[in-house]
Image 1 (tube, rainbow, N blue to C red):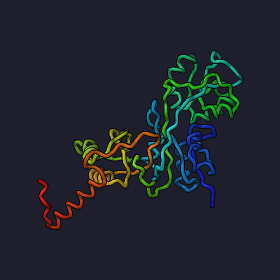
Image 2 (cartoon, rainbow, N blue to C red):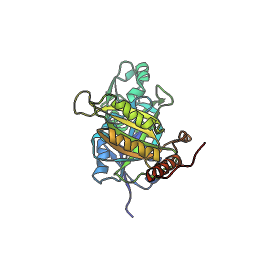
Image 3 (tube, one colour):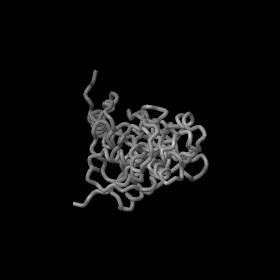
Image 4 (cartoon, helix red, strand yellow):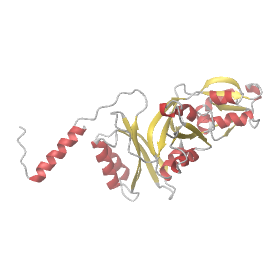
Length: 314
């Protein structure tokens, strides 16, 4: 049997690698660092990798735009599962220099966003430059291009930096959500505590188009846990909406909601149904919205169409 191949946002030492290593299926897999998120995802599209793990959302900095935009505009991929990882940075320097000698800092944009106040208070005279990943920050600092780096503990150790501060963050409870993506395939079986992610492209010449989208979900008891607008690139003012919904495509209420969205939207892209990370208990469907309720309603409608009389309910 061939070894599974998983690409991730590299180089080695990123939080993406750390998150990937929490997955049991990655224990015996070949881990393939990619320079950027699009390169990691394209490796899956071309068949050079079986799956890719990339960051999607951070509790402080919000969504990771490069991931969202690649999913929306790129070739079809499907989310298989999510990983939520606590994020704690280290601040490290080369040659053992202290913070008073730091004039330049390398950091991933999400890292600098999560540590903005810490950087301002600790190295106020330093210029912070965006780099492609947290591990890249450590590498370029070790090579002498920057005095300091916001990085992961793993990357700082691997590249011989001196760690001046651990647990660096403006928000102690910061978390990043990563997603594992594969080529399109049937969704994992429902667990009762699942997320369905889609992108909807509304008809911009229709009044109340977004309200209509939300109504399709609300009337079927589908909870919307996240909504985000992203430009489509077609013209100014043209946006699509990325939605995270509670439920699984196999659920009757979710299936009806997706079919309803397909009828009223210019386009709908389905990105997968997958288990929710964490130990939060599942929220039961509202009254009248369980699969049994949908089955009974369909049975009743079939009887009505067949001309069968319903027994009185009073």
